[in-house]
Length: 336
Ligand SMILES: NC(=O)c1ccc[n+]([C@@H]2O[C@H](COP(=O)([O-])OP(=O)(O)OC[C@H]3O[C@@H](n4cnc5c(N)ncnc54)[C@H](OP(=O)(O)O)[C@@H]3O)[C@@H](O)[C@H]2O)c1
Image 1 (spheres, rainbow, N blue to C red):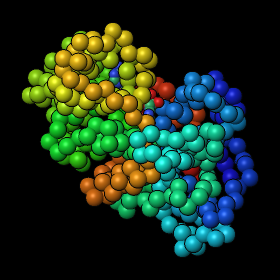
Image 2 (image 1 turned 120 degrees about the vertical axis):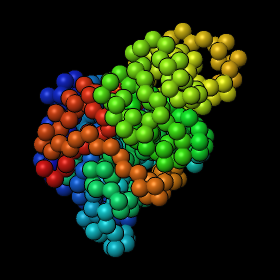
Image 3 (image 1 turned 180 degrees about the vertical axis):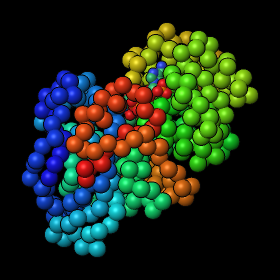
Image 4 (image 1 turned 45 degrees about the vertical axis):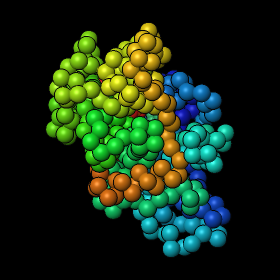
């Protein structure tokens, strides 16, 4: 099979499309022919060497969707031919509050989805929602799971809440907006791009502001008529305090990334006078993954696919992700 392997960290030239032996189905498991796989910022961080505990060479990629091609001994043969989405992690563990010590995101150190095939235990495969195409389904797992836990478990979003999703161009952010709307929330967004703000408005955002404008939080509350009860953020960084100013009293800031580095100059009195919670979140459990799929199927949520590139041009996809001009997910067609 063909697969994209990273041999050393650094520039995109270290990402090689190679011929590798086909994986064999493990006992009780299956081989999936991957139709589409999607990038996450993690894949770029690993290629750049900006991720902990990197083991090389490796096949990157946490997200994928495809068709079960074969099963191993002891596995129910009726799985063959089923369309599946791949759970983007192994071993959440027993505690729903926090992943255990064996928790692993797919794609480094274990083989990932930027390949024509992958071998996995059956409990890492879930039925693909019927209303989705393969690229849309591939765009769902990691971002959808992260957004679901951030909104539902950690954000405690209720119908009618005002939810601010920052940096709407991000892969997790766009699915967070769609899931929040599916939960009955009103959604506002920030972005560094005027075009993405226009796009978000057309997708139903009630307020859209640029995070580059100082004092954007006042404009957001003006547009929406009230401040957000919940903020979903993955930027962090020097301007994190703007979120403390933006959130409603007794509100929650849920953070799942730190793309812009450490928070600076947090106004602690604002935190305690406003009774604000700042909550961290990471991906989610098997149960949350299935709850997310149920919501997606019930509300016919369609993840936003920015574009689809062939596997043979993976390095271009990596470069697009690094540049960050996309709105939604960059997807790779693993058949081409
Ligand atoms: N904890 C977890 O489970 C988990 C899961 C997935 C991702 N993550 C982390 O979350 C982050 C985003 O991941 P991703 O895959 O969604 O990446 P991505 O698609 O590359 O999104 C990054 C986005 O960050 C936004 N951004 C840049 N500067 C910003 C600022 N000052 N304020 C607000 N937003 C800003 C940009 O939005 P605009 O283009 O709209 O300006 C950009 O599109 C990464 O750090 C990743 O490692 C964590």
